[in-house]
Length: 173
Image (tube, rainbow, N blue to C red; front, side, top):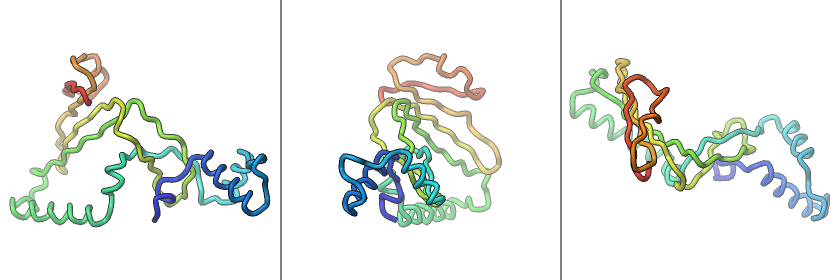
């Protein structure tokens, strides 16, 4: 799958590409580009296409999201679980993960195929709130930990969060 079908185009980009193609075919002139009405018709003619809001995916993560990297990770994980005698002890295995929620970037809606995940490569710039969580398959979880952008913690930022949630600040969030 190439990057075009993997990441999609905005409606404006689709109109531009289709208009250029129509000009090359002699169906349109440069001063009469295709309109949003054409786009609506295009989406009706091609029901496998859709307009959707993509998930933000940083460029570095997009580059590393491949089968070899994922399979290598699971091979190393299995080796680690065997070495520490944890294969039959899921209650002792916790998955810790972080989610960086950008508070500035808002990717545009894009046109993509139904069977293709919608993702938009983003920059790392902007303020981020990091949420760290951990849980095990035995349904035990550690309360979330928030890292907000800033220099001095404002505990009002935790209002409405899960009970026992805690947090701090860092200059990068």
